[in-house]
Structure formats: C-alpha cells, structure tokens
Image: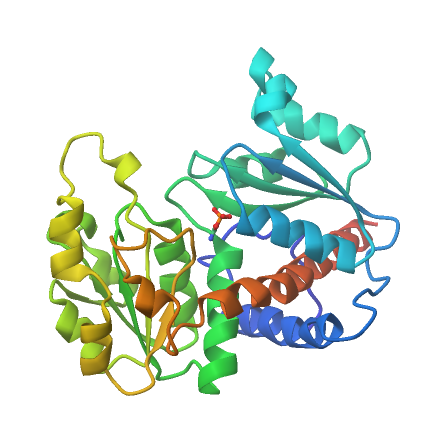
Length: 314
Ligand code: CP
C-alpha cells in the first residue's frame, strides 16, 4: 500500500485496510526492537517535536523512543515552560515549529479537534497523541496490535471496554478501530458514564460487569477520570469498585484466558484490583512495549505520506 496521509488524527477517518497496514508495518518494526542494535535509519535527518499540553508518561516517552529508534532527532516541548505561557496560540506555536524545519509534530492537547486544526495550518505532519475526549489513535493501535499478537486475529473477537466511556478518547479510538476490523465490542459502565446513542458506533451496551466479562476474549479497563467530574455525577470510588471493579473473583468467573488490558495510568483499587493488574491475565506492560513499534510505524508512515503528498503536488 502507498501511504498518502501526512497526518494521523484519528481512527474514524481510516479505512480497515489502512489500519491493517499500520499494524503490519508495526510488526516489522517490532522485529527491529528485538535486535541488539535497535535502530534503523528510516527517519535519519528528520526532526520530531513532541508538543504536550497535558501530562503524559507512556505516550510521550514511547514516541521519543520510537523516533530515536528511527534515527530522527527529537525535541520535547513542555508547554508549562514554553511561550504558550505568554499567550501564544496553538497555530502560532505550530507554524513556528514548522519554520524551525521540524518534520513531524506529535501533539497531546486538552481540546477535542486540536490536532485537526493544527494539521490544517501546517504543511508538516501532525500525529494526534490524544485530543480532549475525542481520540487517542496510537493507544488504540497498540491495543489492537497486542490483541492481534495474543489472540491471532481481531475479526470476531469479543472485546469489552469497561469504565468511563463518556470521557474517554481511548474508548472512542478503540471502538472505531475494533469495529472496522470486525471485532464485537461491548461497553460497560454506570449509565451516566455511557454517552447516549453510542450503539450507533456499532457496539453493545451493558451496565452489568458480569455480563461484560462472561464471554469476552479481552477486557480493556479504563481509568476512572474523577478529575473530570465537575458536577458530582460520578459514583463514589468505593461504590464504583464494588459494582464495576475488575477483581480476581470476577476474572475467575470470566472466560478462561481472558486478556486484561489497561491504557494506564492505573488507579489500583478503583477500577482494577492490584492482583489482576499484575496477574497472569494482564498484558498491560506488553501494551506499553508494543507502543514503541506501533509509534515507529506511525512516524514512518506519516513521513512517507507527506513526501508522497508533496510529489503529487509537483
Ligand atoms: N495511555 C496513556 O495515554 O498514558 P499517558 O497519559 O501516560 O501518556
């Protein structure tokens, strides 16, 4: 496949073939990460800027390692110490990074749609590392990569997503990606944490955790984002854990071999019991490791996509 997109903004806009192509490209890069010298020259001479308006551990470090494994130069901008603090707009920040001859901006932002706005105003590539409640495409890609690696395929697999679906960009990207690849997705949460009409995205809804776990091949446990509860609508932490927490007892009653996933950061004892997070069904740290190969694939492809776009224009 000839990759023609200069940006990765979300999985909603990608075709199943494009998602499959990113995953198969990531497989090749995973092999690179097992070599003694874990580096290829694919992005030598290119510069990747990590522009993060929100905190991050996994995503930012993983993009930095991915870029370095591709031999790119990497600049990290923490907005707390940049001219964003002096009132510089997102677009001015982006066009200045472009003027400094960077090639790819990897951006996390608290506003849904911020990555798409930036991508329209710069000629260089933009990769969405999470925008508001909208999408977190590379998280979903690494989740799907891990599922495929562990289960052999994604089509017809039953995946339950449990937790704060309403505020979750991870849930939205996973739903787009998994349904496009033919998985059967169920979302499970208290009613106030499930957006009305979510069934139109092709998922089933349950408010009973036992039902979500009974036949699932994998459960993706989301962090409870209590900091977003400005109206006191969330259940109490203890109540949530009692009704929806992923406990050892519940995993023992679930399908044998069920994979337990979590994008991190974990709230141990709130959405997941420690013995499950660290137990034999957990693939949480494997997800983190797979993030490197997936992000290498994304950086490589958007770079090719920009070159292809420029060629098409000439
Ligand atoms: N999964 C995830 O996005 O984690 P970080 O917020 O640490 O990047």
